[in-house]
Length: 407
Image 1 (spheres, one colour):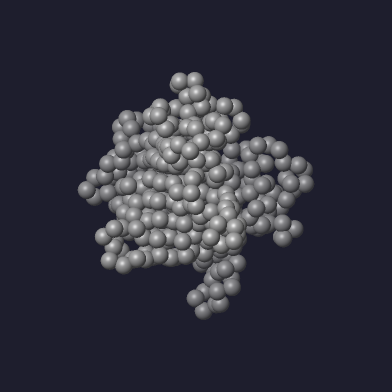
Image 2 (cartoon, rainbow, N blue to C red; image 1 turned 90 degrees about the vertical axis):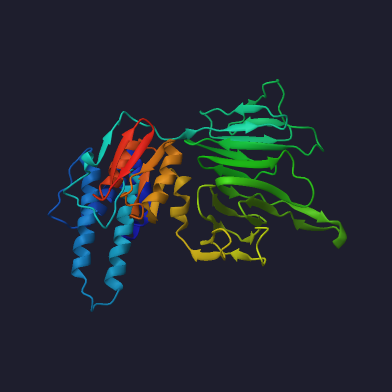
């Protein structure tokens, strides 16, 4: 039975339990996993209290386990403990159970609602929202009941196949040979998927802009990005006439804020917001070449990333390459905020974009407070703020669409 307790299987069980579709066998597996904590101090209630009980058990076991491992012991017990906690965390995350900080969490205390005050009538999370600016300047408001738009030579359509017409009744796609550009824009509080003419799929996070040609001419495919986007690049081949008509792959290039990313066919994420100090490029699959393109740069600098690596470019500084948790990087696309050592100011920028709010800091606000945890992006703003406030180190006051951060 123990071998069934892997992260993917438990997430499947959690998702089915939430929907009420567990089979009897799956229910037994879930119950067996819960009981395997062998904790008589915390009984497992039913119904809505169940999630809270799972969370409490998880953190109580973490506390007990860390206390039981003596410094002289080998690291094997610690590794086993954290593996156990990681699995527990995965099922709590799948249940949408909330946001925790191992530094300050107290299962008995719960969330301190007094740490969030003001207008809590319900600022809703972001939705599928975007506009598409056509080659003639028309702006098409894309449907918020759809998740994505597909750009083809024959016209525009949504992911479900239904066609989109411009305000003038046409498709808005220029005729073959015309070098025209389209621009997809997501507002604060919006996200959308765009399928480019070559079949490349791009998921745009809130407050992002993607500029691309109606058709990809020549020997490369170039697009421009402001904000954050996750790319799944289509593999396209072309004939290289100067090399005996040899078929080669057509490179795909993303230009953003002082850097250029070149790929042949791969999955990667770029975060290049104007209000962020650095550009972060994270590779999930394949290989990419990241090149610094600041015109003032004294020397040319470029790196080739491997899966799981992230390049960080901050202004004219040298490019940094580090290993990262790609699940944390891609949490936004999967419907979550996930913070691993993010400071409060960085986390609040993400929250502000998604909920379309303005964040104002008091002079004593702990901007450098380090956060570790996750929360669903489907929750209302008040719920997210209360969870962060459970650290007992920050207080929020909400007035309209303004969030004041206090010590």
